[in-house]
Image 1: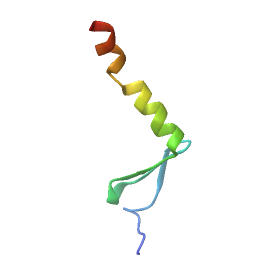
Image 2: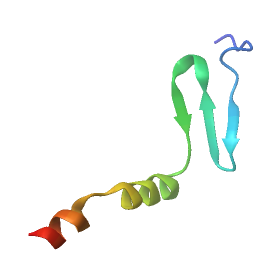
Image 3: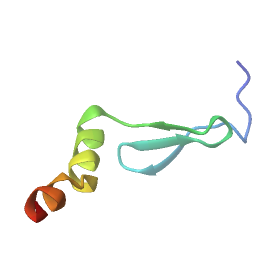
Length: 49
C-alpha cells in the first residue's frame, strides 16, 4: 500500500481519525455508541405514542 499526501491519516479530534482518499473514519466503539445514543430518535417516538 502506498501512502501519499492524499491518503494520510488526519486526526480531526482526539480519538477520531480520517483517511480522506479512502473515505474511512477510524474511532473506538465507545465513541460510536455515544454517537448512536445521541442521534437516536426512539425516545421522541416513544414519548409521542
